[in-house]
Image (cartoon, rainbow, N blue to C red; front, top):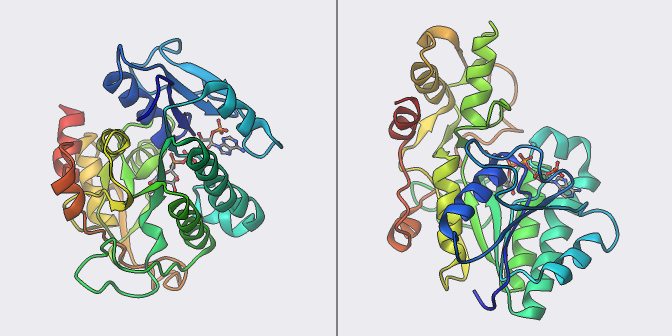
Length: 305
Ligand SMILES: NC(=O)c1ccc[n+]([C@@H]2O[C@H](COP(=O)([O-])OP(=O)(O)OC[C@H]3O[C@@H](n4cnc5c(N)ncnc54)[C@H](OP(=O)(O)O)[C@@H]3O)[C@@H](O)[C@H]2O)c1
């Protein structure tokens, strides 16, 4: 990364973003200031992170000129873009907003970085896939996107614009892990539902390569410091269905493993709108990065220990 500027986490108050801020503080300690920017950047620091350990910058990415003014003022050496309209249902309901946050925003940030020679890692998703099966067993960086919904379509379009402008695109899988009591992500959502007496139905016909959110954040920040360009799949080693993942989560939280029901996308008529299998092949990331990408069982066991 060129220059003495800070590391800027756009979307630092989100599920992944809070972990990016925490990991950036650890990685860049004594070297760079860490700035978290969003509409409410101090809202939810990751567990163990003091609210004054990082600089919080209030920015509405949709307010004309506000983000560009903050970028000029901060002059970051490196940026991670984790701002998004990240929920599939929200993207279906608000496609215009999805376009602004998932397509136009990466274009704008990548354009700014390209003009000033700054490093950008843009965070994307396994859900750019699902419409067409992969050439191999899992989707590699060489498979073309085949989204099945507005979220996947807008993320794929945002990736392409960011790549054209020289950004690195890091595709992540379904994330689980500590959401600081917010009930976010694939594990805390399930544990919170079961703890309050619900019986969620989890699919046995939906496969992912899930990754702990802390591992994902560490990998993204390692990538920020590497001279790697293009797309990289950063994912867990294990292909697992949602129901099996849910049972691991319950066991790790000391909850009864039969607290979730098994169901199928087919039972609920959701086959067209939810991709069955978007498992990512992360072999390139494993060769490039020193950050361990643990299996769900290992990561959940370490968290509950
Ligand atoms: N969660 C997953 O399982 C998963 C899996 C694969 C990929 N990803 C990718 O990872 C990234 C982060 O996902 P996430 O789950 O952490 O999302 P999230 O929890 O919904 O966080 C979204 C972030 O965007 C910010 N934001 C939204 N609208 C904004 C606006 N108008 N101006 C400024 N900031 C705004 C939010 O902050 P404020 O509300 O404070 O503004 C928040 O910090 C996304 O690119 C997503 O596609 C996530």
